Length: 305
Image (cartoon, rainbow, N blue to C red; front, side, top):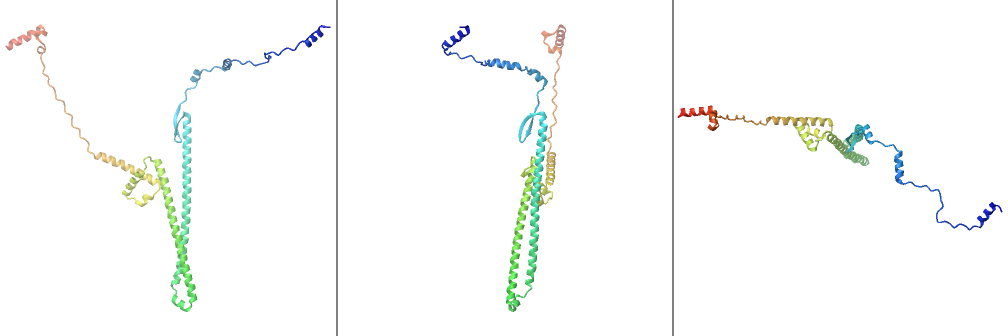
């Protein structure tokens, strides 16, 4: 038996190896510690010098800007763009308001014209009925009744029909007139409200009290009160506002110049203080005098005695 056969026989007769508690070796990816991974990732990226970056890019300036009622801090180059957008929005809104007001005014004017045409037709119908009724007044109703009672009944029926028609036309004319007056008042109130909003936006001090003061000023200058209180012309109100403000300034200057100016009393010169000059010998005591001074002082005393 050769060596190969012997090895095969031994392998076949040998007992099976007990399973080992240790797991079989497999290809397992070994995870590196997180610190090593972070260090590796950080090492892959070039380091950025923040100081050098700050030196190359100066700090961006910010300015406050108001947008839709709120204040924001934005980069300085964006401020002008935001202001332009806000100004464009205001202009577009103003144009939209003017267009809507124009459309409302046109609609109201059209309705007023239609009512006026209807009233004209109604008035013309009433006049036509009145002409027909005038013809009935010229009839001799008593003679017609005696001669032809049936004709009398027909004519009387026609006259009553015309009178009813006239009453209907007159009622419709009155209702249209009232509707026109109501629409006119509503249109005037709307125009007055729009004018007041525009004046308040232009003049911060605009108020109902100011309106009354301006009205009284204009009335005192001879302006018709009814025309004044029903006007909604902004240009007229702006001229009146300027005139009223100028008059207030003029009155204030007049009142200031009329007040007596306080008289300032003339300053009193201080009284001159008279000082007596003393001689040098009187100014010093004998102990402090020099020899010459003491001799002069002593001779003076001797002469005095």
